Length: 67
Image (cartoon, one colour):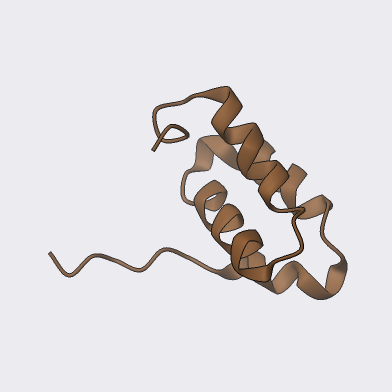
């Protein structure tokens, strides 16, 4: 939510989260960064920290709400 409000520290934290040793956390961070086009620089930075065999995590997307 903080990243959605434009807080730079929250965006930087999502980039850092892509480096942790959990594909679930990595995927969630990449999904959040990829959700908005104004985060492309942060998304690219996060993706560049991953080994190439994990780049498929970058294709994860948020599910649409049924509401």
